[in-house]
Length: 480
Ligand SMILES: [Mg+2]
Image (cartoon, rainbow, N blue to C red):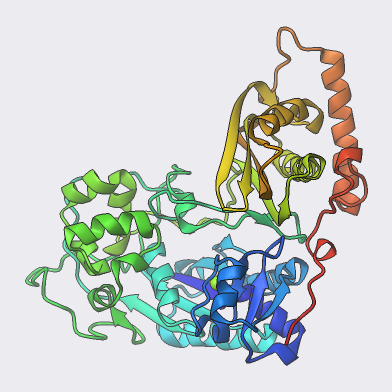
């Protein structure tokens, strides 16, 4: 069995922990730039505010809502505190994001707990009493079910999904993944926290198709058709369950299709057309139709829904496929200000990429105007590059293609992609080995200074007008 631990309204809860007078009030934790809601307290959620909403939209719902910049340092510390507690519980643990963890309960000393609900309740109480932070716990035979279970009764919820009966999927099962998530390939986002470098926040869909390899451990509770039982007979609540909880079929019937991580808004249109209203409808859907609509990720998602593990809990963190960074700010047409932001982003993304010993062979730069319209430029590089010196001319070329002096912009971003190991770097036929060597030496010196003393220590002259970090660049008092 797999457990999914998900901290409730994490960024907002961390702010409340630090400023207890905010407890019980509608509060928004804002992202870098202050224009986007990263997390809302449950008092704010009750009035309709959602994660990812723009501040403008949130203020329409709650005009006098309290808002603060997220405290990334404090959040990283809180994340580490929770993770250390979970590691004491279970040796195989996978951090899914800064506030989510999967635990392979079969790896515990003594194996999977007999009473899963009691075990989950103990975890929840311990985390709350030792960190002051609330978590929800979901337990299920697969990662997908565990994740859906933790979301079911937030905040502070406990849901154990087990038992039930599912018909076997048709055709051969897909090759198991070594780790990762599930989903149908919709967006991802990154951001960094000061603790231990960058923490990649992956949407559940991001992991899809990223890693393949060793065989998955099949849970002993993996469901198989039992002789003499009808495939469609609904299981009674709690039927045949360890430690209480919900039977698989009852749980899936209670969840709308849209609640499945990875289905997303685009896919919900398809599921609606097919008449699949609940997660159970998708679990029961003909495999051929699922394959036509969603391909291999869809087949894997269906298996996970049926309680057949496709994705294992893996403590290994995979190297990134791309690194990106963007920042929102007040609308500006100022070319040098936008360029300064871009150089800061380049500094950050190169440092992050080099921590993995990677270089890139592609870059993208984009601008967002004040009407929320994005314009971007992509460039494939002639060889793998991993220094700011090498990349800067190409970044400038992309920037020139998207910048318009008449258009005010509210965000600029960069992505370095097609990441390859550094040893793949080769001097090009017409390159200057001496120049490249100098660039590498300079970059190594910058890496050392940035790693040891922070990115504020040294920066390019053109980037000096833009500070890095969050709190320094935001002058945002708390309004009551
Ligand atoms: Mg959470």
